[in-house]
Image (cartoon, rainbow, N blue to C red; front, side, top):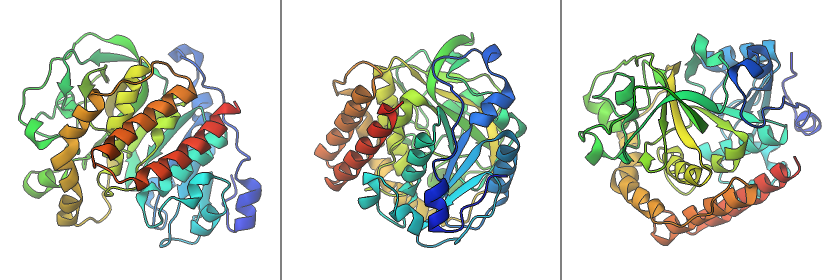
Length: 375
């Protein structure tokens, strides 16, 4: 059992001890056994709660396979997180991490998760999975994850309601512009095509990621159809969240969660930047059938609604801004980071985000560039 960190000294001594297996490049299903892949799995969450059932289940499974659960605390929340295969960093341990980001990242904020990404990458992750502590894994959560999937491809540009491709046409993902909710769903193929998706969003059954408008007026729970993956190529847009998402190494710089926006928009606005940058990498955004169920932590729906208002007003504008940009083609870390910066500079120039965001972004780019350049 991996020791749980209980003091700052223990954390500093042990935080870089785990090294994952090599997942570089495109691997076929026959090239990687499930136990080998699970041994490489690094899962990142942030929380202000004591260990939940979902966190316990994930940690227990990772312990059997040699994986690691990275847990970022905050000012409030537990002083320790006594789960197997878990590396927990309370706010005090985070403050002494050797990252530029530590100096500028706000506290009492979901974006403390950014530090978990850096720790997992520095520990050798070639694939990183993020979730939240109110999500419970289904059996297929532990199936092999590889960049190339046999997917149905979206055939038209514009907004795409991915939930419709999994049997829920009257439900929409958080972040889809409200003006697009009743629009016809763009066509997608029924044939399966091997497609590289460096970012893959898994759906969640029962209490999926929908916005406050949906939650206030329409019914839950919902279970999605167990359908084949969907791939969104360049020009197709769909928001994705930070609740059940797999990232492969070349997309790691795009993990950055912006801090100078509301809690309900940080992962959504990140998703728009990330998929725009994926186009220049020649890769696609993937969505796969539900691999989790959600037992949602307590939320005020009216507070969620208030925090989502910037998205209701700006999400389509963000798409227009990002589509207008000229970015660099390629997958080199420098190119991906340059594209990331260009996207956020454009959002700042259009007053979607404040200037302060760029200082935090620059610290992230400095940290992730140094870590990835040493590989």
